[in-house]
Length: 293
Ligand SMILES: N[C@@H](CCC[C@H](N)C(=O)O)C(=O)O
Image (tube, rainbow, N blue to C red; front, side, top):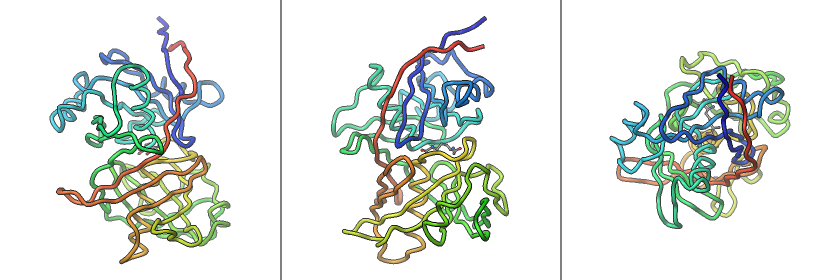
């Protein structure tokens, strides 16, 4: 029997998502259905699918509620190939906007909305660029795999980081090299992280620091989705890696230019260690209905 799915299409700096509300957790899509929806030729087309479900209806949501009982809503996130991801920095801003505009949640200026994710509860606030999300504590994930991308002259060492999901950041020689990389192919990582990784390629802007703000340009190949116009957690990982490479005195505020626009990254101390926050726009562009097989 066919089911009709009412969906909203949204994006954050061109990283695009199909969102739908399933408050009681009745509509668990299969990986094949998600891949069909995300197909840019035969489906709606998107980098990922986000289901809005109340945390109490999912086992992972129960963990979110144990962490923060205010995390009523869970961001059930899927990559374009149907695989599950722990977190999505652009997606969570778009998700919060979707919750607000659907009348499912409220968020006044200065207030915080905690959202359950597989990477832990994430706090979202409004800000001048749209929304800011505290991505929580970050860590070096220990690996420095050699990364080889098509059309690049040599393999380069990457830096593994965890910002709730896994990333490997690679510094390239210059903008020419960044433009030349063919990210329609999955970059080859040696050794390959068992859980896979999103791979970010970065170059500094000239100058790297202006008015106290670090500036980089980034392209990304996302695990499970391919090259995207932006990746929020990837931008955070790229800024953290660049600050790490720059050494003492490097700034804690960064502007990351991606093919779909610009996002902001900020590192700040908290009682439980340094956190990294991401800010940027969140747009809802159209609504539609589709028949699920
Ligand atoms: N586009 C997202 C990241 C989505 C998940 C990622 N592909 C993964 O598998 O970890 C972002 O904006 O952070």
